[in-house]
Length: 275
Image (cartoon, rainbow, N blue to C red; front, side, top):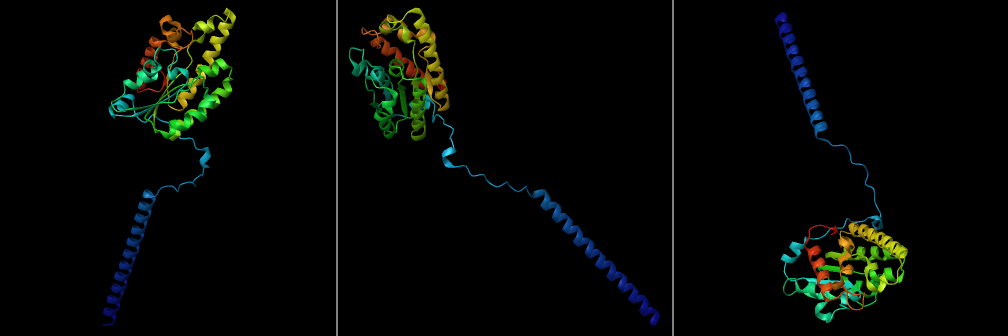
């Protein structure tokens, strides 16, 4: 019995040892699988967030909708910012023949026109006299032609661009409007200016106008504004005799029709930048 007992006891210890070893190996295997799974699913820790002061963040401007969508949405509010050309000076009836009025006539029925044009105004003054109302009206469409008076008055390029940046930045940040803006035509072709310039002065003036237009183009691109390039294609608005009024400076009724066509065509394009 003693021999048999020891034999059975030895078999019991062997079985228990084997069972313990089996449990230990199983536990190790489970731990390895768990660690592998955790490693496979874990992601690298994110670096600490860098806080940027709010005033240094510059949002990317976008046009809210295309011109076609704008017109398809029904009645809208149209704000015109400008000087004597927005008023319609040079036409026989500024209230009906100016480009602003003609453009408004093409908008969907029920649309509201807010013409902020002020004769002889320059851009810096327009920041106080036109811009607040333009923002308050919450327009869907804004047209701008505020550059000719500044250039003729001798406002420096740097001062004008600073004011233009302020204007477009405020409009882009505080409205959702589609914005269309005209640049400088070749003013040396206007009778009142042409007679005052010799050949050398004309060349210099054209170079300056091109420089201004390049800056206006860059500013427009920054704020997703569509530009009407009045200088392009021979500056038709100042070169065509039928498009200049009897005062030799402002557009004629036919000139205003052409201006309205330019703005209408540019307003409907899906592109921003020069048109």
